[in-house]
Image (cartoon, rainbow, N blue to C red):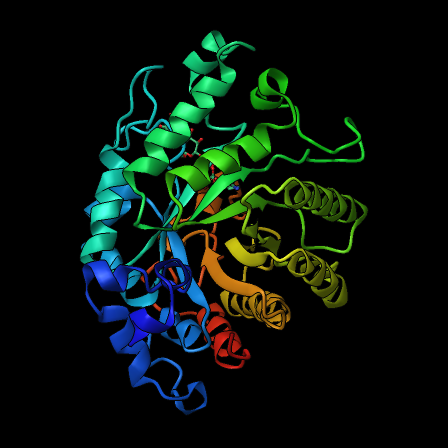
Length: 387
Ligand code: G3I
């Protein structure tokens, strides 16, 4: 019945593409729930609250953590409806337990990515790919090798090989990540970031990447992903304008871009959130015929008070305020957090607190228990309109 009503592509986009291939665990769970209003918070994982409204919830994961920590892995399976590898689909993240995807110009190492793909398959979950074309996490050999003659071939070969390997399993791909400059008011008039791809291929590298991704994995939702789109500041205004211009240009050229990914790395102590501005931006994106995904959400608590109760309440408030605003836009189809638990978040390493206390930016705490942030998320999903 479901297969008849929806195409394989729309099932994948709803996070149910795994059904046909891997079993009915997703649909089984969401069908048990007739109305979100009747749900008792706490009874189900976040994915169930989200899915009841046609929204996909998931998290970034690391291969080494899933492998070494079965208790954590079980919580991931319980809460998440989609997984995105935090490291292993990037060209080069060096970690002793997670070999880089591109160790050499003619080599690919899929050890970590395959492990996560198998974990996802075993649990009936689709994957999100992050990311095919980025300026960061590139291997040292690239800078020594790339030139105007070979750049396009290197990019195309990478997309075809990596997206080709997981074709049919991917809910979506961040085809191009962070192509707009950190501060687009400086530099080029089109706001594009100076990257090797821009330097050696030119501004059309963005649409070329989308074309190749579409040919390679026609079922996946193809996403342009960026950060700095959340606040009512001069910088974020400029970033929203530049991203919108880029998306308009891509659409006008007929590039197969299907969605904007907005990372949503938020701050617990910032009071520059303006719901009206975010909603207007989302509406402008949706008017281009694009879906929207919240792709890397977390709430940085490094500047919040030491008191855990107060900190957790403020972090929860930011989740609630942002998600309630975002989910009011029907084009928003997914919410991904950039970790599930405080046990494994990039923020403990990249943004530690000055008082030395562990950071608490995620929906589950260090003991994998649900926090007020989890409740805010479940509530925001449960009260969202169905899409
Ligand atoms: O663990 C190794 C260590 O052994 C080595 O000595 C050290 C020196 O290079 O590197 C360590 O690996 C680092 C890894 O994080 C773990 O700490 C990598 O270099 C570092 O590049 C990697 O950072 C990741 C970063 O992206 C760059 O890929 C973060 O974990 C990851 O959370 C972050 O994610 C990004 C998204 O992809 C895009 N949006 C922003 C987001 C946060 O920055």
